[in-house]
Length: 150
Image 1 (cartoon, rainbow, N blue to C red):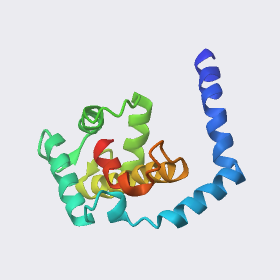
Image 2 (image 1 turned 90 degrees about the vertical axis):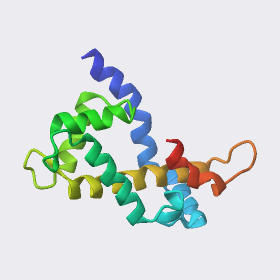
Image 3 (image 1 turned 30 degrees about the vertical axis):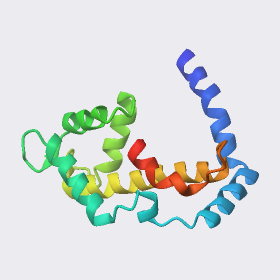
Image 4 (image 1 turned 180 degrees about the horizontal axis):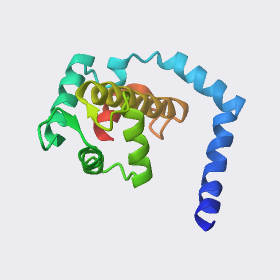
């Protein structure tokens, strides 16, 4: 019960902000101003180049070289990225990535999911930066570096 209460206390403001029409309008305006393309968001890296990087990551963590990531291999991959994900979050990402629900993650599943999630993460960071200018007044000039610094 204590963990649920703590979660709800942290989650409530986030949920409220997700439903806020004012914040949604600001997000839409920032998105229009930013006019971000996937290449812009991912630091100038074309999709093919990003896919090659993701392929390398997949191969690094496919310990038994069977062409799939098991739950353990996938977990090790995510933990090595120091994303500070909890075991339930890792399990949820595994389930979301395992599109054919065979209990393993293929290279195609990994690349598609990782690309989409990286793009979403970088887009959100760029939008946050656009919506909240830093003290120097810099806008999206540094957005290309966000993915690389994450």
